[in-house]
Image (cartoon, rainbow, N blue to C red; front, side, top):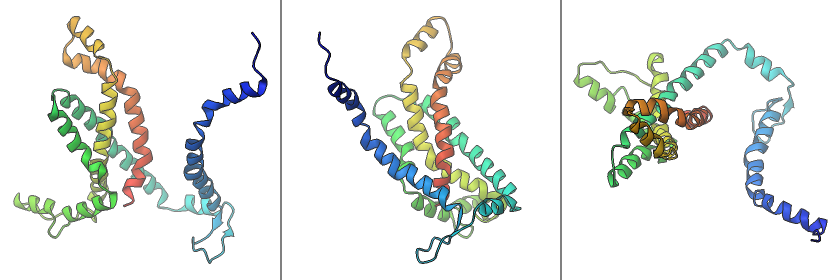
Length: 237
């Protein structure tokens, strides 16, 4: 059998990669190009106003940042913030998905849609609503606490409460997406494992601990990584 000409073999070999070009181009333009520009700007002294010149600063910006006395506390606050979000994106979604397995039919679809709904709300709108709910003057949360004789709490201004208030707000918005991801991970686990375990006399708790959670660990690791990457974006509004 005669071999095809080299140009034709190269063309057929490159064809599958051509389908990746649009995605790679978008990734290059919208992700990596801004990232490179950000790194470049870190070596300049510039107020980001187009009419003002950008003066080269070398490593002085980094030296100034690492010499700030607030850097240590800011790092600790960031770590506490990320650790505080993990229960909302890992622990609670797993419990919700396992509980929803007992719900069948349209009720399950409604149940999961209701939990996912907060993720569809714009972060700025979420911030405005929660600012009203947590307002120390007449917010709904303080009104409920006042009914039990608790004095008004300034959740967003008191240093004792501000961090955890932001964690609750951001965690509430991430919860729906986390439930969706964990639900997809659980759906990818074959029912044959649980059926075989029940045949051997395993309880539901043992199936969850020994089968479901270990097989779900890649999904949970993905969700933890996604939490770290998206936490700052949702905190800013």
